[in-house]
Image (cartoon, rainbow, N blue to C red):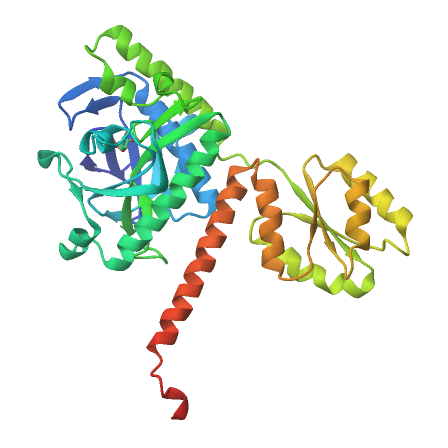
Length: 396
Ligand code: 5GP
């Protein structure tokens, strides 16, 4: 990759300028591995390449779901151990989301059973300061010390939770339990979204705890290295094998399972409802074929359509637009694909479709979470705006 001058160097990363693109950086992940704030340090040849692959595949998934991140591209094929990211001013916090009690949480809370499910998920902030061993810091202290604004703390909490749910879903599909994950945030330095809060830094096999089949002893993450009693060649080889396995497993994280929606309007009177529904589905990136057919006037055509569609698409969901239940009842018994009633709010109908296909598809699952989060914040913003209107404004 075309790199400019080195601008910073960390324990496992080197940052370079990206010539001709002042708003971008090249991140090279190194073969270094460390634990205990650098007290234990080793090199595993090839680890940087595996880390960059893992990181790129995770961030591609997050970008496809619509989460704000600094990741642009790289990490595959000829990119070796390098990725391109948007330049961001880093916020010196580690944001940890936990779904299962482990690690420092259990050390700090001896009453807490290791492996206990945490509901709701727990979000913790740690101040990045190696000399003080990255101490826990409260949201109030983050705001009081001007590390981040109240709005940023709220956004980091929300985005970190969404990130956890998306990665947990992806891992669950592979029968792996995501125990916890650490991310970092930055503010974009340039471009049209200047100042926007984004997930920055890297997310790789050093960033999380993952337990296949929910069994801690099968762990595949950096904890294997932390747990080595003595670091020898055999131990490091075990660590590398786990990193290889993880890079391979996350290979399909950013792959969307193709799905198709068949919108069927029951008669020409309902054809005008197709376009708004199609628009709502497009929000999720869901393609749709559109048809008009009538359960009472053209029943044979409905059955022919079902045969045709089922022979063409493996993962199919029908959305019916009718007044009564004639068409949906007919389809319910004519097809093995799910049939969803699309009358009413198009966004709600699109959500139903996305959830159905999202059971097997992490990208759709993530997009569903984001649409719901945006809907929540829309309500909160509207309420906040309402409170700012002076009570007697309408008398004016
Ligand atoms: P804990 O606080 O239990 O030690 O860690 C919680 C989660 O954050 C674990 O998944 C752990 O791997 C991750 N984590 C904690 N500190 C660091 C760090 O300095 N670097 C990285 N990459 N991950 C960390």
